[in-house]
Amino acid sequence: MAKDIAVFTLTSALHDELSVKRVSSGFLGGILPGGSYDFCGKDFSTFGQRPLDLIYVRTGGTEGLFLKLFPELVKRGVRKFNLLTSGKSNSLAASMEILSYLRLKGLEGEIIHGGNDAVSSRIGLLLKAGTARRSMDGMRLGVMGKPSDWLIASAADPEAVKAKFGIELLDVPMEEVKAAVDSAEAGNGLPFPLSAEILEKAGAKVSAAVPGAMKIHEGFRRIISSYSLDGFTVRCFDLLGSIGNTGCLSLALFNAMGIPAGCEGDVPALLSMTIAKAATGHTGFMANPSRIDTSTQEILFAHCTVPFDIVDSVELDTHFESGIGVGIRGHIPEGPVTVFKVSGDLSRAFIAEGTLTANQAEPGLCRTQIRVTLDTSPQEPAPAGYFLSHPIGNHHIIVPGRHRKLLENILK
Picture 1: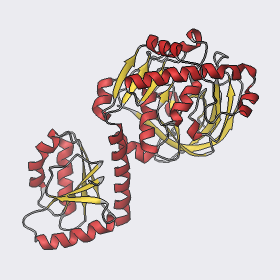
Picture 2 (picture 1 turned 135 degrees about the vertical axis):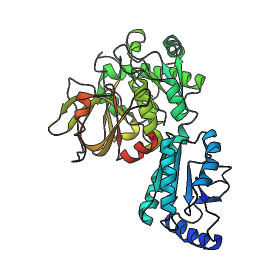
Picture 3 (picture 1 turned 90 degrees about the vertical axis):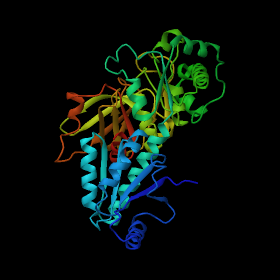
Picture 4 (picture 1 turned 180 degrees about the vertical axis):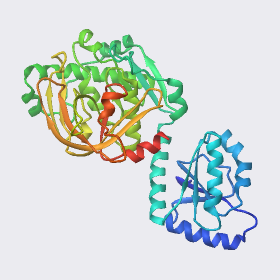
């Protein structure tokens, strides 16, 4: 069975093969655990078929060898080349020449060089990024209805999304969604993590709306099954008038099941959730920035649904804007988070790490509310200024943990 990492080599014929092999064995043994990779040597026939391919430039004088291989590798769709160097036998010098050539051709590449710990850590990060990218290739994401009318800057470029990640965007008519909900049966049981105690605290109005919210959930499930979807976003406000309920509970459930599910037909937000899920295992909290303090870098985020798998407690309320249906107030544990958003053509991204400092429950905002203080650095502009000067739409994704480097590498 093929390993997730493959090591291919470039070696000049001028160097003694036995000596080169001896150096290679010691070098690779210091940065990669035994048995964790396939050593493919000079046979590049399987290059591009694994989450991470490394070109180990073992000696100098190998630039011409790479030049002969280059056309075939590009023909296979390879757009980024990871050049591994040992720091011996002019390996680094040759790698620099190769990387310069790649840049002239408009392609991505990097030289992996340094101490064993640094090289091993970098390879681990690249492997995670490659695995995440590969997991998205072939995904089908549904757009149930068009984006809500107020999302005037939140369109997507299906061709760019397909080219970058292999993700297919499928339009699902809202009439078909409503028909699926209408034909579904109202749910009788309580979905995890709801309980009779939670319903009792929510009050009679919200408790009475739960079966209808589960009817919507069943309708969404049928659409997912019919279109073989791996995730979706829905023009959910259309349900308020025609169905008289909300999709908030269903979205919380699907996200916890590992199916990215977003609100308001916002495709860039759905893409952000999908990338975050592939990278971290969590879909993240899709929310609006409600207040920003640029002096402290604190942002208040709020929305009426939140994935059940990132909260430690749940309360139910009505949907904020309409006052009907079921809205979710989830308590997300305090600690490190990453705020993330990509544009619909994937040409821009915002990634900032910070700390979730508090949950709150103001009556005049969407039901789940968190305060996040973004990290600052003397080398970079204060991140909160982005929201007021060049934001990527209004919805952003908040993911537990610090994932900036990983997300940056997935997007490269």
